Length: 155
Image (cartoon, rainbow, N blue to C red):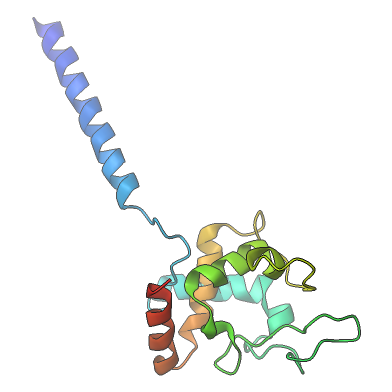
């Protein structure tokens, strides 16, 4: 009978562990692209990712390249600013995430679109991409952040 109690206890423990794992999985981030500009830890991580992978094109101060709205001699648009003067905040969280992960042309499904924006899939994981975008968003004025939040909720 003692072995039966041990086996039953082990079975119940395994079932409880499986249930807990299922609950944790189900409550995990279902939207890895959701930006967290109010989370200081995420923003700090994002600033480091931005400095390493984004600043060389988009600027150390998120200022972008000069004449970013005018195609260069090869037909490419220069890197836009990510501060409030740019158009980044005009796009919802999910699209910004997809552009960063896949590159502009693939994310926006624009065949023939010329862009030097690479996709970072395989270079950065989802959390780093979301963190870098969260850092960018954290620098925007509060009014723009609120507008962007509202737009992103309506995705």
